[in-house]
Every structure is written in structure tokens, then in C-alpha cells.
Length: 195
Length: 195
DNA sequence: GTCTATACTTCGATAGAC
DNA sequence: GTCTATCGAAGTATAGAC
Image (cartoon, rainbow over all chains, first blue to last red; front, side):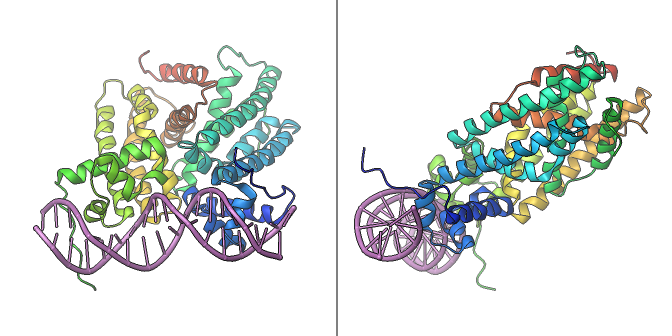
């Protein structure tokens, strides 16, 4: 009801610089390190600018999430159009670029309702596209979808890729090489080309 | 060099109450919510007591991690002694009690070196015991360990279980039922009894 | 449209009283 | 061995100047 405060333009370079700084902080030091002061300091700006461009910290996190998700959706499009989509999907899900930011946002989401619902919504968009890719390959290969439902294969495949990326971040990699080889063999059986 | 400040006894009930409060906060609201003031408030105590019993917040997180890990190691012992260890391991890894706290600590570990190394050390202990369980079952069933190395099976099995628990926490469960059934079929082939 | 001066809240940690 | 009084630093956010 009070006089609506003004907000910085989305096209502003300063805004982008703040988002970049926030993302770097989040990746390096976790979401708790993303404070108005530290973000501004990293960007070489005043702390108050964070609130001018994003009003609240939640708004900043939301903007960060959206920007990252849109980038990943663009990269996912490359998977869809790949000549070897199953392998491309496996590599896409294994990519640390995708998981690191998401892990922090997922942890953050545990006590920020707006973030959680936004993440869940994006997750559904990714899942839809990815499962379609899997379904198409399984159909081409004549795989029995009663035994291997695409939705299940999706959970397993992307889940394994992401959990290894998460563990690797903590410095835990025992068994990863062996697990990767095992997955590679299954991918090959499903018609993916060898690496 | 300065006069070493005194620290509360480990046997203190107050100390346990603080740990309980911290754990609850962490599970409900994420690690960033675990502040000396909020922990104390939840336990109905003064904030300064947190620093008396744990000196720094890192010490508190470390105590939380150790207590949780020891509890889980005790539960893991039940898996080892189970008549159906493979299924018991699957259920153990799927248990939300084990994953929720670990997820928060893992996220926290990304910018707290002491936490990260302690988590990694515990992870190695769990991995060792769990992989031994898998190796024993695979040997009994005459499985070719070139194609299915126990370390790989361990990564896949526990990874899938944990990622589903993580996703479920965010409200993302699409495909989980199908994935679970698929895993169940594989477990059955490896001699685990049906649920 | 862009940024600053400022208010008020919450934080971790220590020194010292019981 | 247990707890309290207190401090300086850091946090979010707004109102208003340019």
C-alpha cells in the first residue's frame, strides 16, 4: 500500500555485475555467504545497490535461479538436437556447471518457499524434456518400456550423474570411475556411441 | 597464547539440549538458520551458552556432524548383521533421517574446510563398510565382479537412494515409484528377498 | 534511472560473575 | 563447572538526494 519503491532496470550492467558476483560467492562459499554487503564488495559497489536492483535478497536469489535455469535449458536444447542424445544427456547431467549452483539453491530452498516452488517448477520442465529424449531412444532401440519405463531410466541416469558431481565437490570420488564405466556399458547397449 | 577459555562438559544436559535445538533448526530451516541466538532461543537458554559449550559455531557444527554420523554408523551395523543385507542397505540409504542432515552439512561444507574434511572422512568409513556388504553378496551370488565391481554398485545403489531422498525433500517425486520398482527388480535378481 | 545516507536488527565472541 | 553482561562487526532494508 505504501509508495511502491522504484527498482533498477533489468538491462542495467550494474545489475548483471551484482548477479555475477552473487553467483560466484554462492559457488565459492555457499548461499549463506551471499549477503548484500559481500555481493556489493565483490562487484566493487555499494551494498545498497543490491536492494535497489533486487529489493529483497529473496528477489536476488530468484533472479539467480532463473538466469541459471534459462542457461541450462538452452544447453539442454543442444542435447535434444544431438546425434547421440542419450550420451549427450548423460554428459549434460554430469556437468558440474549445472549441479553446483543447483545444490546451493536446493539447500537454500529448504527454508525459502518461493525458491522451492520455483526450483520444483523448473525441475519439472527439465524432467519433461529429458524423459522425452530417453523415451525416443528406448523406442528406437526396441527396449521393453514395461521393464524400463523412461521416467525410471531418467531418474536413475540423471540421479547417478548428479550425485557423483555432488560427491566430487566434497572430494569424495571413490568408486566413481568404476561406476562411470558401468554406466557407459549400459549406454552402449542402448545404442549410444562409445566415448 | 591468551588464557584458554573454559568449555562446558560433554556430559552436560544443557549441551545436549543445544545440540538437539541446532539439529532441529538445521532440518527445518537450513544451516543458515543455525545461529547462536536462534539455537539458544529454541532450547530456552541464553545465546552465550552456545559459545560456552562449543566456543565457535564451527565447533557446534562439528559436534552435530559427529553425533549424527555415530548414530548412523550404529544403524549401519544393523545392515551388516541383517539376514538380507542388500535390501537392508537399500533401505538404509533411502531413509530420509540419514540424508536430510547430511545434505545440509554437505552444503555447509562447501565453505567450511573443517566440516568438509570431517564429512569426507566419515563418508570413507561408511563407504568401506557398505562396499564390503555388497562385495559379500555379489560373491555369494556368483556375480561377475569385472562387469559389476562392488565399488561401482555401491555408488549406483546408494547414490540413487540418496538422490531420490533429496528430490523428495524438494517435492519432486516424478518417476520415483517407477525407478524404485526397477531397482527392486535388480535387487531381487541379486538374491534380495521381495518387500 | 541511478546511487547514497541512514536506521534498526541480528550476529559471533569474550571477559568476568557466580 | 555454569551462566550473564556486554561489545564490535555485519546483516537487511528504506527514504531520499542526484
